[in-house]
Image 1 (tube, helix red, strand yellow):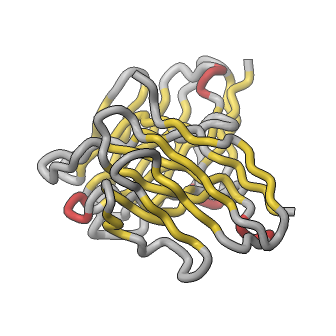
Image 2 (cartoon, chains in turn brown, purple):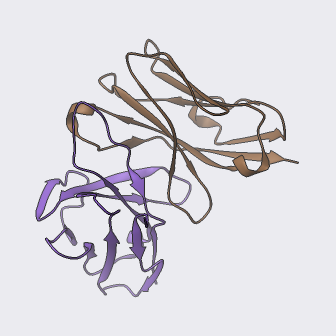
Image 3 (cartoon, chains in turn purple, green):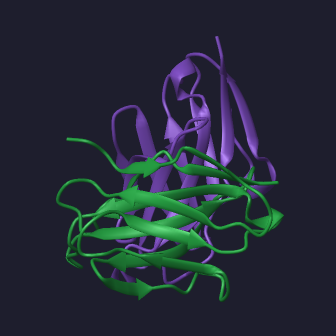
Length: 113
Length: 117
């Protein structure tokens, strides 16, 4: 399953499928990007990050892709599990400005068993 | 090693009262950030503090809101004369001393849900 830009805030997938969550960031000067997972009633939890000198970075079951030309970021989750159900936020930062993050609006991922 | 601790988890205030939200950063962290989250929205930056210093308060409303991070004790976000529009989840995050050579990840607390009646 795949979310389409910021105007589709929900994504529903079957357990075991791959998920793709998209994010359009706003500031062309941003040089550091993070994906966070937020479960209900909890604070954001770091998933993976990427700097602007890279276009792809892989973690455990997750991959982040960065396209600076169109200011687009995506998070791919392989073999999605029910425990992945949460709201996912992208955040952007300009490293020389400190750790102030600008968050996107989020995508609600629901994994159906 | 405890994470970022926020209290209370839930705070109910009537219009016109004061709200005080507390945040204890992770051990060894000297930088604190406050973010506000409205329902169905992303987090919005409010203020960035180091011990006894406000570094960046560009996201703070000009009136009624203040923040401090004293030499001893937790960081406090204070909202005076609360209004219904202040109802939101307020998250605190902390990071270790900064190095611009690496961007330290922020560690978030579980938030304080403020409800204004």
